[in-house]
Image 1 (cartoon, rainbow, N blue to C red):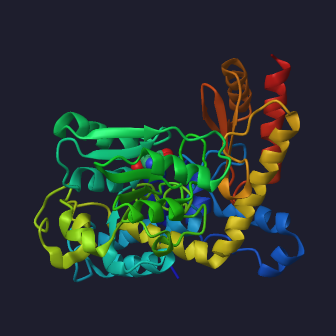
Image 2: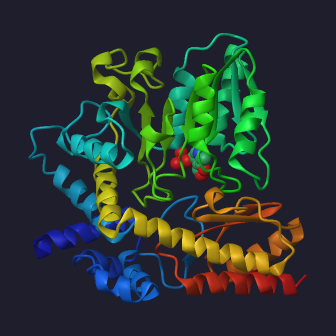
Image 3: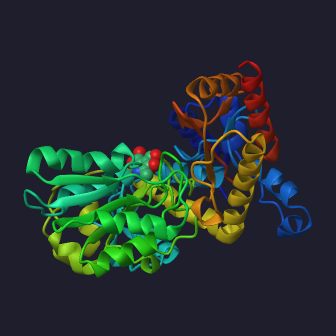
Length: 426
Ligand SMILES: Cc1ncc(COP(=O)(O)O)c(C=O)c1O
């Protein structure tokens, strides 16, 4: 148990770090997080169970975050673990240095053990990095390529997945080819076929999102990777959205490289990420950031974590996020996220006038639903959401709604009230 002095220290750090007013910070950080609701409640009344879980987040009562696809809300137990570690590290009582970015220390080892079990990969094939962009850049910049070699991507890649290849076009004279994903897809085979037909004699690698940023469509990663391998083409999966949103088994996917941002759907601290690198390929890949271990191949994939002094405490928070997930239950979490997204999908479909861009069938969506609408309509929906302090995502011609376990059904109702108001003002 923490002493009062330690609680107050933790509160002060939280106030400084999170910019939360002191009274709220004292309420949330001078005591342990509220207990989790009992599993019995889940069996009796699921909605009541999830409502009782909501106080695990600082998310203000008058705000709705229907866009954790961009950045997730970190729960209190994870924030506590991170803040306590910040304070602990400054005592310098451990024999190791309190950092991330150099040699592995016990908290980082514990994290890699836990993360590799969560992802079903070998710990030595896993690097810790700071986000999916860094993971994507490690592969994009590190893979040796000759002028004229080709990379195949989709039209829905996030800039953090695409731009590293754009730069190599300019710098190294490689060629970038792009397939246009159907909105929505008709079948997994249709997508695999599009990739297969676009493979050219010099295609070295297919780099694609497991779940795309624009429409939130889940691509058939396992089938794409198997097809690519049968043609001698490498695969890099940008899984920024996948960990925490869908059950994830990287070994089963069979890709060569996989990067992610657990700060989104796993609700880990911002600034945490990972990269999987297939063992046979590790020695071929140059590091993106070079320091003392750049050619220490004995480190296996951890060579790609030699990034210079970075924050250990957020990595401790990542370990705590995995623990939080496991405590609640990954299957239960997936079911809830998807159940809420299905409610969104059904209500959008009931208008009968908005094309569904991803959720044409169950396997193509998990916690994100994206529908198309004319620009003026989208803009009015966004205005009405702003008035109601609801955060959603989208672009000129579409709206993307994300649901997570902190999302309450009443917040979905509020989104549809905003949508109705937007349509009335048309
Ligand atoms: C598919 C994809 N890749 C990469 C990123 C970038 O994530 P980060 O900023 O955490 O690196 C995002 C962010 O939304 C994304 O959707």
